[in-house]
Image (tube, rainbow over all chains, first blue to last red):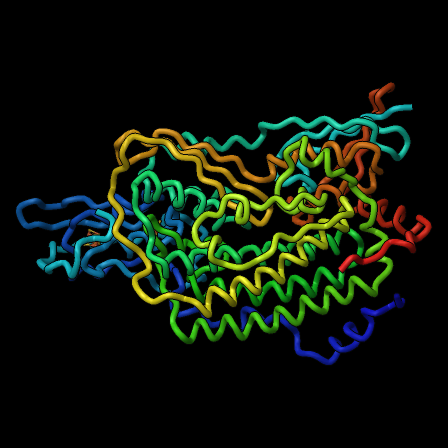
Length: 132
Length: 400
Ligand code: SF4
Ligand code: SF4
């Protein structure tokens, strides 16, 4: 047993680069599969409502604005979203996607809401939704 | 003269808000009493209103550190209810993440133990090294804390060659660092002396009080669900159950360091033998009426989920027994006849999070009813003074 075995390690660290990055000026890359916020590509959405049904946070809301014209409105309440990407997994047509933004805080939760109004797309699902 | 000291319900020394009343005589704790029920989140009831899929993300949020433990325990049970078996590759990835989580939890704990013992540089270095494993988890799953990798019937993300290589490379660094910490333990007498003999829990008591995880293993009982009741792939993976004989906080440290090395071995085995094929099978939306008990060895100990289905797409009942609950009875035993100054260390040793905030402890004079508020900083200061004033337990040996 010796006294002060940690000292060489401590001294070594005086000459090392810091382990952290200078955040607001320098940002780390997010990984390829990072789960940011979900967004919709309305041209692909067939309004199957799988995302709405599987979302654990009830963050997705789909309403029909005009039944005859097949117009729908989707609202993603990003203030409720828990960034789990289950909606991406549930979507049969890849209409639901995740972005890679992580600086999404806001002073007002209502600003986090995202909205799309679109006509239902006629796309053939690539495969059945995995969970239906 | 006896005092009563209440700690909690809101106190950083306790993982969940629980209330602890200690009767002290001078510096020595003579009796301790634990009251639960302050952290009722209605989570089990909420689970009954959500579908099987949605509940994965709910169980993930039971705990931040063991998030994967709870989802795995839950999906294992649900898969049994739905009578589906995830493909081999999916299982390998699932338990790979489990072991990575164990590494990050144990490194975090080591840092906390160092911090409570007054060895803050150790805390800084272990937490810096923990970033390596957090980065691996982020690369595999897409996020650092709630990995969301599990789904019913397998996992959601596959691994590619590049990721496998990255994990193996990072693991080599981690292994080297862990060896250094082990070496440090052998050679740093003050750290060992602070931990030795604190929070004694005999082998008989550990068994009688149903302690779980590293707490029971540090009392010389080789109890590990992965060995005793192998789930998933643990019957094919070679590993050893780590124990220690010292029955104190030092033993709990040793068990965790030994387990780190076991984790590295398991991960290497899993990556070298990763089968090919799909990572998930399609799961039905409903489960036939049945019930199941799912067991899982979380970093802190045995985690149990009881799930009952009634034929719909929602569970009828989900009951969660987290490992910390299993350790409460043993904690009371450990506190008895210990010093007030050791409370932070003993609580840290069962692995609740103590370093997150600075709050106050109220010292109540039982006779006059007078309260004295001391801050967490002052309590830690006291802890360090006692440790410094003690004749060094020179004979205390690092058992690794
Ligand atoms: S990421 Fe999860 S919580 Fe957010 S909208 Fe999609 S399913 Fe809902
Ligand atoms: S799951 Fe996809 S296709 Fe179906 S409603 Fe949602 S976004 Fe549209």
